[in-house]
Amino acid sequence: MDNTQFNKPFTTKLSFSQEDINKFAEISGDNNPIHIDLEFAAKSKFGKTICHGMLVYAVISEWLDKVFPKSTQLSQTLSFLSPVYTQEELTLAQEVIAVTGVEETLQVKTTVTKSDGTLACQSLTSLKIF
Image 1 (cartoon, rainbow, N blue to C red):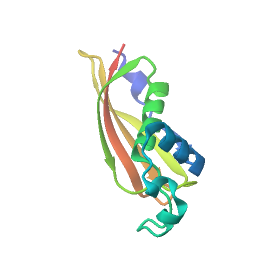
Image 2 (cartoon, rainbow, N blue to C red):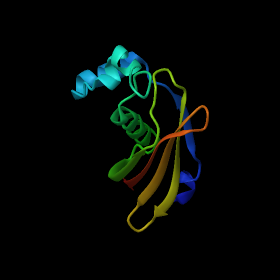
Image 3 (tube, rainbow, N blue to C red):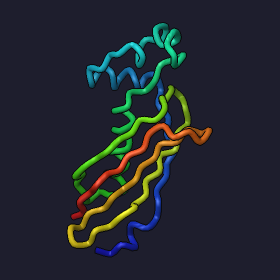
Image 4 (tube, helix red, strand yellow):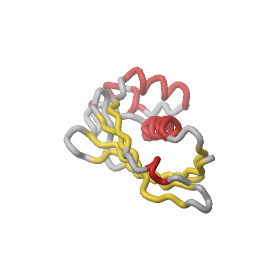
């Protein structure tokens, strides 16, 4: 396996609209009011609606597939560290932290960071490269 092709970290900017969150709630069936009820969320400790953690993960997964198109996910660990709000600018960064040539697997660290530097989510994914 040519390890040099995996040396460059990848970053992209993203944000979620309330419409994105509502669509995800509809599709997933997760209709927790903290995600979709503006009035309820305003009275919560968050002060407004927050994004589903699995919606954040869906974007992580999408970018893993774009950056590593000839791969299969073997495992995933996720930590949700702070809430993601609507229209909040986020930076998604992915970096290969280990390459195993014998098994042709990659360990990819992903972080989702808010514009103030707060870490919203981090993950470690094991990918098999074909």
